[in-house]
Length: 174
Image (tube, rainbow, N blue to C red; front, side, top):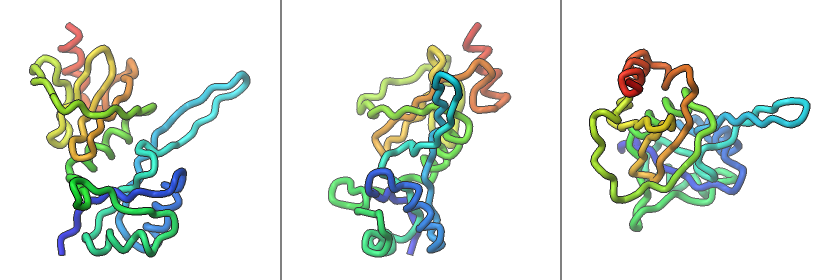
């Protein structure tokens, strides 16, 4: 059987717990975390929150994914699309990993079904086949199999840590 990535729907605020339980059972999983910095009057605190609320990504066979809801506490069901369990592309999982590793304060937006053609002058970084756009300093990654776009604001010190991206940003700025 072929292993694919599936999105598992969890109880609210149980994403990390489910991820740890899956890891204990030696099931490959991925729970992308968002780095958020909160400042209060006297101190700043750092929180790691899940990017996708109530979702954990699991790489396993379809039969294993269906039985997860019965075996692991905190898992409700699989994410279904048109009556079948939704499979997520490996390239999109890699794009999420790379994006969450390099960017902070990520927000999700619904993906617009009518995606306009992007001109080459707006393309600043190519990440596993996904086009990341830079306009007015936000960076966007489209995830069509999930129906979302991940958006993060770029700091002044570069984009995604890539020298190529920094060169292209300087070209775009001129």
